[in-house]
Picture: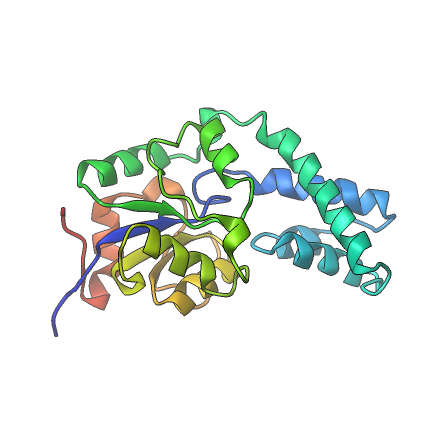
Length: 230
């Protein structure tokens, strides 16, 4: 069997490049408190990877209030959460990059691999700028143009197109179940980054500290995948 060549690297943002889910969760916790809905560990574990609309519905459904608001009212609430989150985004710095990320990105750039950011967040360009990662990611999916959010494949199909690669020739890095589902639906090889096993991921790493080209080669090797310098 001919080896599968990796020709592009696609990255989720929250939980892969930066530990910014904590800020989304803090914003949603504030919204829940304003709606007099108890904040639970289950909500904190469930929301990462969800769109704002789905996050709100999940919070409302936790107390049986999923039909409590009109579509316009739900939009106002999600806009409010986004405004809260943007306050956190403004405070991001390169210190918020996850361990090992900078060295891995430098290694990929040195090997001439094209990179793209596969985030469905409209705040992604601002976050990347505050993190000081813009030089690595000239290619960022325009979230407003996506027809569907994760677990639909749209964001990964768009990310692969930005770097002019077939999704099947790209590896995606994800930290959530919905993210892995999106990447696999697009046809990407997928490496999950999480201490818990993510179903459907082709390989798993427990931490971003493990990221390197040699690690990618090792964990994807059993799938007859080669990651060589271009």
